[in-house]
Structures are given as structure tokens and as C-alpha cells.
Length: 45
Image (cartoon, rainbow, N blue to C red; front, side, top):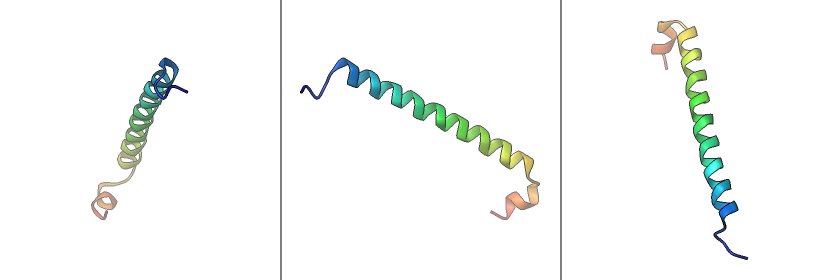
């Protein structure tokens, strides 16, 4: 078995893209959550 194949590199690249998308979604959810809460409770963190 070859450790490096076009399919493996393609899957790795797609996994990288998926993690980046998840990161963006997570940031958006955090922004929505923090903007929904009052500023006073945000300072308490």
C-alpha cells in the first residue's frame, strides 16, 4: 500500500476545508450567542 495516494491527499484536503467551515460556523454561533446576551453578563466571564 502506498501511504501517499491522490485519493488520500484529496481526502485530507477536504477534511481541512471541512474543519475550516466548522470553525467559521462555530465563530458565527459564538457571535450570535454573545450578541444575544446583555453586556453585563458578558463581563462576568
